[in-house]
Length: 249
Image (cartoon, rainbow, N blue to C red):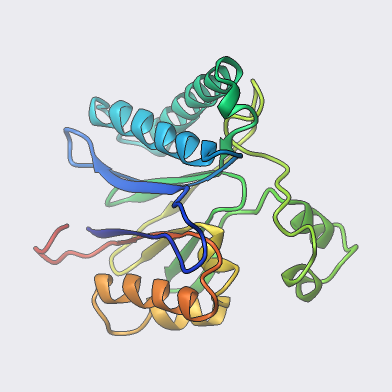
């Protein structure tokens, strides 16, 4: 297993409200996370940083994640706890009122990957069946697309493209999507914030993650592309590749 995390402020924003990372527990199992914070007065970076810190601490002391059910239970419990702590922090600190964050997280073992998401940060899977998005955006425009009110092409430039229907920390209760996929040798996961997917087409994402470059070169290339196309938002991604090679990062 090899993995890399990259984040970039982009070319326009003064602050990076994205956060993320790749963390191992005592048994060597990886947890990959991307969180895209939101909220005024820099509260977005508080929300994303708190989320990563809390999940990292919880993961580092976790044990016994052997089955998909174990992984799903851990993610549900931990993310619900983080949601409550974020909400309480925002209620207690006026400068953080209304803060929240997206989250996409994946527990990656040598048999499966269990993925949870809230908001519009995404997870893509590349395997023998091809390259595809495996998460659903919890956004207004995605609901309009799903209900047939607008086309996917219309959604690309919709004026309310950034309106989320779900976020972590904005309410006391939150719903998440959670799923498990088989993870086999040479399969690859891409977790990313919308600073990447709003700028780089799915075809270009696929071309980049499936080329012969190293994982680090792929990650740098994706960030370079998003900045080349304007870089108006923070750009954050994790790449995780299942490989039997001895090299491990």
